[in-house]
Length: 118
Image (cartoon, rainbow, N blue to C red; front, side, top):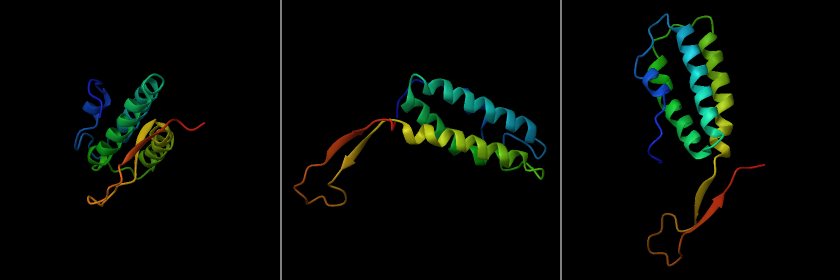
């Protein structure tokens, strides 16, 4: 995990950050988080993918107390994930090939670079 990037949305998505009537503000904060991640993705796709994971980890604990009977929060979360999952999938990464689970194996593990899909 890369160090150094400070996500603004982290402070707004802490545990139980929104009360039962916080649908509107939570939806607004989600849209801001998506904008922040998409902005970072233009220059640093791996850092943006880490931001996606960080937001997903914080999403449920922050919004668990909201009573969103209108469905607005659910719709916003759906669109948020629909927008952010491709960022996570398309981030370049190193994949370890071979050598899993067998420490006695003489096969050396190799790494392959998987760049963004086109």
